Image (cartoon, rainbow, N blue to C red; front, side):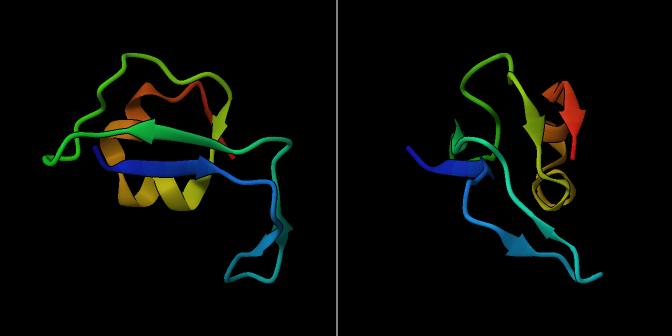
Length: 64
């Protein structure tokens, strides 16, 4: 099963120059169509992930 990383502890740089990192690593298991296997996401989702995966963003409690 493929997975999508929605948060990572390692700092990464956004295009506007801001470095962002989260307090934990987290991923979502998806099927081959890109649909989530689970039903809920706890914690924030990175904005870059939300832009690429709108179905994941719709289930997220917040987008950082």
